[in-house]
Image (cartoon, rainbow, N blue to C red):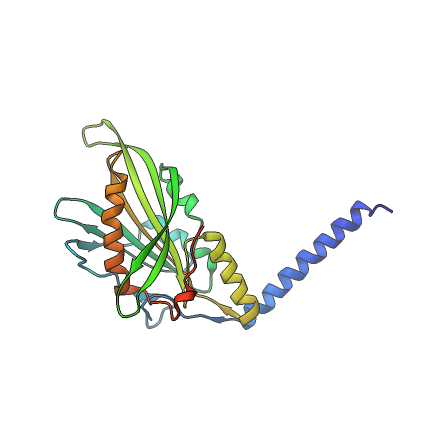
Length: 244
């Protein structure tokens, strides 16, 4: 006997209502997890203070405050820090950390941000970067090569490439996959009642077309040297998960 369509719709709506109800109850009793980066609560605020190192290798840096667009876009409990690192020869890398609070919409899909700024995403490659320090580990990241056409000061169009490297980290958890980050977040919320405070970390550099590999090589060294200054090492080596 064929199930009536109205009954299928009713069952689907009931399941959706049950899921929303369960998540609502979880939200009422959840506790916020610890971040996987070095951060301290700002007195009188729900946000946290995060610091990127001022000098790394031969890179000096300047702090870049949030733009008006970002201030209006992020939820109020979002914590944010960005620094622009510059080598003596002018090579620059923009580094950003976005740390969520109780509102997980602080962290969005990386696929949305770059195209919204005019960048076309080309290749996507999973890379493991060795991180030293007292507790060495391997950091899984995604490396995207992007392309854009920028206007020079004299009004000409110039074709450029961009190398974008990013990953996500929480308390003893890390991944380069946005889907996997969402899975871990929901798993911990459902089974432990903990809303992990995830951070989205990214490094971005602009280079001439054909120089993407050389740019990434310099970025990789910067990442390996700077990450131990602000990111907590996983407690166990087998907790490191590769992104995809």
